[in-house]
Amino acid sequence: MSNYYTRVFAIPTRVPDDDDESLPQPNVILSCHVQSYCSLSKVQGGTGGRICERSFSYRAEHPSTPFASRDHSPSSPWWAIVSFMMEGMLLPFPLDRIQWLDMNAGKYASRTCMTRDELVSEIARVLSREVNDKGRKRTKVMVSMTHVVTVSESEIHESRERHCVICAEEIVMGDQLVRMHCSHEFHHGCIEARLKIHQTCPLCRC
Image 1 (cartoon, rainbow, N blue to C red):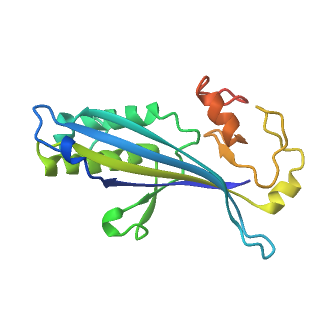
Image 2 (cartoon, one colour; image 1 turned 90 degrees about the vertical axis):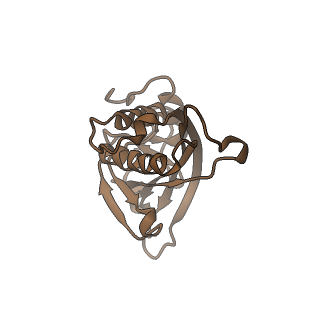
């Protein structure tokens, strides 16, 4: 079975000068850049490497007042807002193996596995901290999400009958795969297009 994980970090970003001024109702902007690619594991002295990289961006803006709260529990007002924004992204992969990169400790200094709810709390915590630091100015935070699926050469050879049920084509070395939360895998382009219409797995309907 192929391995996968999602690496995430959040950092404050600069707001353009003509947009960075005191506002009667300051807003918070969540800008998310999502990358998804497949990599080959090193098998029998192979070199491995990433292939078929794709990416997309998502942007949402909300009044910053709820983010001024220092309540960090799931019942806080900004927790629900961040959760709703993430649902709106329609990510074509599960968020069950998350590595959070603590940017305060250095980009690669700290990696901790967490659940989706914990990820929402971390992103909201960064937004809350920035809103309180910026006062009545517009705040912008960039979230970077990189989803990686690693498929070994032996896995491809041992699974000669593996097909993507959406396009009915065989899964071969070099194909970019996306694994749903139910563990079923499909070609990235196939499942990405389907999720825009149906937000369930085509095999088990989960």
